[in-house]
Amino acid sequence: MTHRGQMLDSASLRSRRAALGVIIFLSTLPLQWQVLAPTPVGQVRYFHLGALMMIAIARPEITQVRVLLRKASPTTAAMVVLTIFAVLTALIHGGLWANPIQHAAYFVVGVVFATALFIALSHPAGKARLVWAAPVAVITFLIIFSRTLQTAGIDPVESFQRAISSGDPDVIIFGLFRAAFATSDQDEVRANIRHEIFAALLVAVYTTCLAKKVSARAAVIAGTGVIAAVVLVMVSLSRASTFAALLVVIAVATRVVLRNFLSRGTLAVFGALLIASLLTGPRFANLLYRRFFEDTGSYESRLDTYAYSNVDLFQRVLLGGPELEVSTHVMATDMLLRGGFVAGMAALILMVIFVGRTATAFTRYLEDLSLANLSAFGAGALVVVRSMTAGGGYLGQVEWAAFGVLVAVAMSANSSRTAEAEPTVSPTIASNP
Image 1 (cartoon, helix red, strand yellow):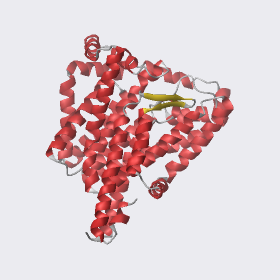
Image 2 (cartoon, one colour):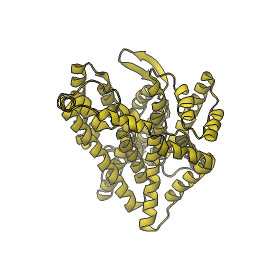
Image 3 (cartoon, helix red, strand yellow):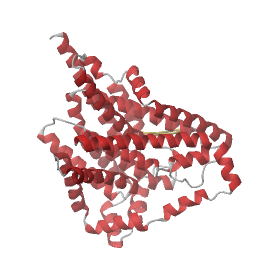
């Protein structure tokens, strides 16, 4: 074998190994409620183990991670500032100082995930293997979730029938999900953790859509996994995840209207939505309507967070304050009221970065009809929506994984353009970010 052939084989192996690490991580990401062991600073969950397995299998080089951190330097700088000031104000006011550190750790894992995904996208062998992300994640979730329901003695079919017949979304939200996700300490977290769980399925879907040159059998299995994930997101009644997914449909519709052209990717998106709608049925559409437009209690309670006196508000903005009784569910305002002006500005910068990168992915999609750029837009839309709806002022591991998809696709596109402009570049160098 020639030296060039050996390098190509090595690139193929690295790419396939990175793809396997990505798939394993994404298969554990929806298992947010599953706890391995409690610790003094929090609970060790299955997806933490998945992150470690991804690092062990993908084995991204530290130089590659550093390159990605440099390319995302505004995000890195904002995260460092946010973490420092959030920890300081938490210590001063007796708050939860471990939360910002955990948030920073999730950011680092998101960077490693983006690096592994970029390596997987750097070679056709790894890119093809990514097709299994959604099917594996859906199967893993359904197996563990069904065992959880069986242990809790809950009949999901009966719960959905009661919810549809009564038109009451609380039957599903509290009667099903709160009871099922009972490993958490707080009741509110039990119900709200479903947003992270089903958002994780969307991240797996977007990763699957990055695959290319797969067999017909793999394409059918992947399509089934994508449709199943979309149905699960719809029946979860998670407004954040559903709205983020709906933005992808709006993006596709915008592309069709502006260019008057239907691609296979466009037909696949509309086809998945149509099948999911038929599977859920019109009576479920009424339940969705009530959940989105009539169930406004949580919105109203968030407004109470802003009911501070001028003195209290000034003190919180200047020096931070104790934990909020009710989160505003907006990253920047939560950090402003709890971590002070500097932490709030750092969080606002992060939100601006999320919007900017997502808008760039949308622009690229309008230009080239690429399913990869549509997936990047979907992942970015998920991050943007969750930064405006997640409680506590911090993003979870799911959102930083979605941000990793957005970054990896952009880096892969830039790398491809560089390779086309410089055809003599060594394959080894070209495969490194």
